[in-house]
Image (tube, rainbow, N blue to C red; front, side, top):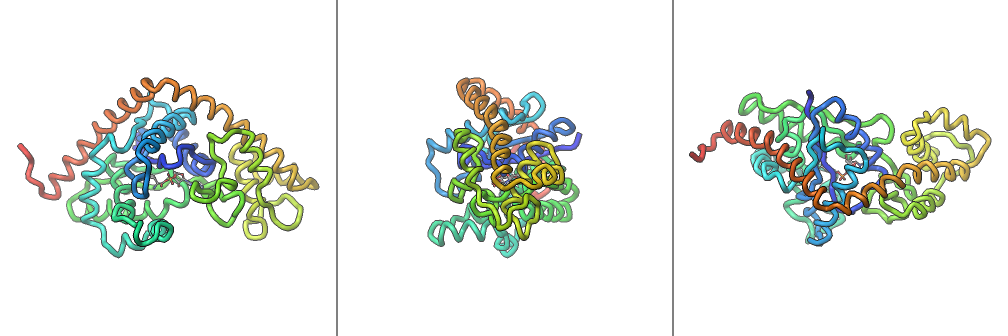
Length: 331
Ligand code: TYM
């Protein structure tokens, strides 16, 4: 079976609709046909300042949401990144293969460091993409389901795999991104020129764990475009196009079908119906997440089993890598 790895940050506690439509629904689909490893990347979450109690809580909430969305712990290894120390062991080796200039060109680093300011920018934020490469390569994963914003990080991962193989002999498959056709980049509802993100004001971001009333209101208040026809046009109508994409991905209707159905009706009708579609989707996810959180012992058992399964693979990769780069075995 092909191996799959993906990760998600626990930073906001609740995931948002961009996470789900761009990545998580693919996580769930891929477990049918692959051997999948899915992690809550808490190590990545401390590259910007965090509150310790909140991080612990958010890691649990994240794991519960992944289960609620359909990650099946019988099929896939679901775990917390810091429980598998081999990610860090491989990360160091990969850091020593990454050019300083190469890392400096990562646009997410440039954006985030600008936001944090010079004083707040850490070396961890800088090396973040190398740790991500290690997450993937430590499982010798071939497929990585992610949204569009991770393309550049994936390209770095591929370059590092090729470089390591060239220097030390064939060790890593060169992984491919699994990036969806529609919804690879869900846009903010208030600023449809920006991707939906937890770091923008919350009015434009649909959090899966929001109160459904809040969710419906956010959708009804989404900014729309000039004109009144419900048609997809990313340049002239970025707001409506985004709403149509979200609807289509969740409901299974094609964008063309939706355009036809809303012909002669206004933006308001689309938003009203979309609010229902989204609320119908998030309501059970929210309830199931809460249920899972109520049985913390069981949740922790799932994560421990996931980490044990992940380590079985990761320990082997690190042993091979340590040997190939020339470390003396500690016997
Ligand atoms: P993160 O936690 O920011 O996001 C998790 C996943 O959601 C996708 N995503 C989106 N997709 C569509 N539209 C959006 N507006 C949107 N916002 C986020 C992301 O592309 C991602 O797939 N660096 C990663 C976490 C990571 C990782 C890994 C991913 C760490 N190690 C190894 C894959 C493999 C990140 O910050 O994702």
